[in-house]
Each structure stands twice: as C-alpha cells, then as structure tokens.
Image (cartoon, rainbow, N blue to C red):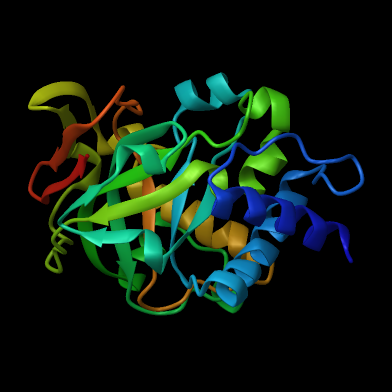
Length: 263
C-alpha cells in the first residue's frame, strides 16, 4: 500500500468514526503541501467508494494575513466538500456530531465551465467568465486535528480537507457582475448577536483572487475544476466556535443570508 493510501485510510477512519485525528506515523505522514493535496485526492476516492460521498465543491482557507500568521504559513490552503456535507439556505444539525464545530461567513461561487490546466494561468479577470453565480455561505469547520496544526502539521491538515466539515449554501445570484464583491460586508450572528464582520477585500484583496489562486494551484497539479462545482472563497469574518446548541446566521450585503441551527 502506498504512503498516500495509508495516510488517507487513517484519515478516513478517523473522519467516519468522528474521532480526533492524531499525528500520522512517520512512514506515511505527508511532508510537503503538495503531498498533502495528493493524500486529499486519495482520501476522496476512499470516501466515494466506501461511504458513497461525492465531492461537489471546495473550500479555501487562510486567505488573510492574520490567519496565515496564526497558522505559521504564507499561503492559502484548500479542502474538498462532499454532497453529504452540503445544505441549502438553512439546516439543522446536531451539535454533538462535531468534535469542535466552527462557522465562517464566506462568498461562494458556482463554476459555469471547467477550469482546466490548458487554460492556465488564471487571473481575477479571466475567472469572471467561468462563474455562473455567487452566493452567501456558511462554511462549517471542525477542529478534528488533535493538538491543531502545530501537532499534526499543515500537510496533514490539508490532507484532511483543512478542517472542512460542510457548507450551507444560500440563494444563488446569477446577475452578479455589477456587484463589487470586494466591497460587500459579511456578518455572522449567533443567537441574534453579531459576533464578527468583514468585507470581501479581506480575502486576498478580492474573492476572485482566491478563485484564481485555487484554479492555478489545481492546474499546476494537472487537475480540473468542473462545471457545476462550487468554491468557498475564504472567510470574511473571524471563525466562530459556538460553545453549545445555538442559532447561526450569516448575512452578506446584496447577496442574502444562510443559516444553521445546532441542536
């Protein structure tokens, strides 16, 4: 069994059992960011075969200098999201289903066409024609890594989808090109109280810069982003970690809201 397969099977086992992910053995632990993404690809093959989970989208994290400093890195990181983790508009989820659940307010985009390596490099301007809709989203994260990135390492965090645990996708806006995404304010509320706010420009200067970065990263690996998949472009707000069951809502100017009730 390859190193990537061994690591991916250990991550899948912890994920499906809802147990903390501990440091992987030296014999299979990814040593580089690129190795982390390779394990992530193998992981999603396992989830598809063993648990019938199908990848339908992606998340981008660490898109702000503050979060990169916290993580001790100088670049964004990305993870995958499967169909069993995706909800529309509003949903209710058991709080106990997560190890340490968190929520983030993000602008999501839906791809209108494939983004293939042959068309790279991508830029903020060139990805505009590749996006069919934008939407307000809640990224649901789960601090699965025991001891956090300092304990398991950034490559392993990437292999484990960089804490991705789901997404609530709000109403899609198709006539979005006249909206200045960088100027939009996003807010996250818990039990009706505003907890954090930020603007689109907080995400790499513009949310579409994050899309271009991700498309170029995937292209460099020879991988294709597919028509109909979504991308969560990075949090406009600080991640919030509710201490118990609660009502969460995110609101983004001109785009609308999304919500989740943790029961």
